[in-house]
Image (cartoon, rainbow, N blue to C red):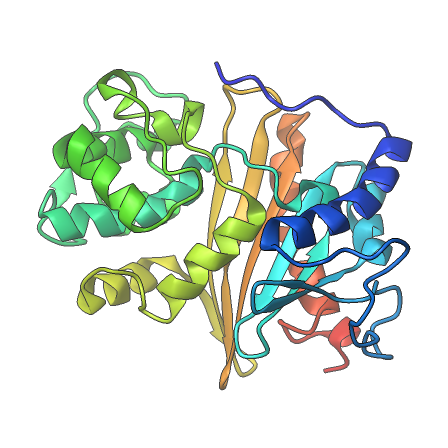
Length: 309
């Protein structure tokens, strides 16, 4: 069991938003002026509620505390990061949690799929892997599946089999090569569940960085394998956009993180995103995608009324 971070009160979360901004710039090695970001350009006048931008390396970070109401209205705690790869700008909702790491749960299936293909642990997306024959928490998982089927179904035992085939040493090497989160896959004893129970953890910001490399096929892996992963991560096409995503939910840690991560392509624009929320109730699982979509529309990454489309 991985111990989760303590829950903050609403007042503490609000105070932490201010502290988080300074923490971001200090980590990046830049100055953090008291009372604001001296020397920064003023935020876009069209971004009502946006705080002055900060620099994180060559990426500008804009906080949107006004959009925290999306989580508040749903009665959940969460964070959301949108990274505009062309503008080199990240928009953060819930800044105090954006850099906090949590287990990636099934969002790791993106990396796991790619590692499986790279190492030859599976011949391709259509090779069928056994689930093992044991009763599962989800009835739909109680069948052998190919990765093409198992990815959208989040078939945990099939991906456990894939991880066992990759092996502990090769998995550790590839996770490190991908610079994935804290890069810690633990020991041999957790080789087939380190992404669900720990010690592997990743933040919402780090998710968007990993996804940016994947979406542009810039990971240190065969381009054909990255393209294959795109095939099974595709969620929808339409209205001049293409959406790729993966959900995740770690039920055996406390607090239990729920994820919806991915990227949106709109012409020459590429936006990667990561939503993470605390799953206090099973019913909250149904909120991940709708809340992420609402924020994607609000921020103009997906078409919709709030984005002016």
